[in-house]
Image 1 (tube, one colour):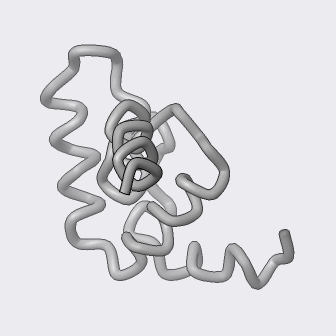
Image 2 (image 1 turned 180 degrees about the vertical axis):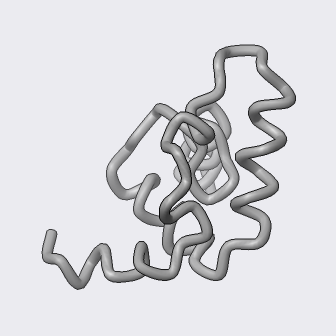
Length: 80
C-alpha cells in the first residue's frame, strides 16, 4: 500500500487522540460508546472502515465498528 492509500488519516477525528480510546476492554460499554462517538463525527469514517475491512483487522474500533461487527459485516457481504 502506498502513502496515498492512507492520506485520509490526516482528516480523521481520532487523529491526536490516545489510541487506547479505540481499544476498550471487552465488555466496557462506556469505553465503546466513547470510541463510537468520536467515529460518529468523523469525516473519513467510511474510508477508515474500508481500510479495516481490507486489512482484516480484528481489533479495536475502526469506522465505528468493533472487530466482531466487522467480521459479521464481511460474512454477510460474502453471503450476498
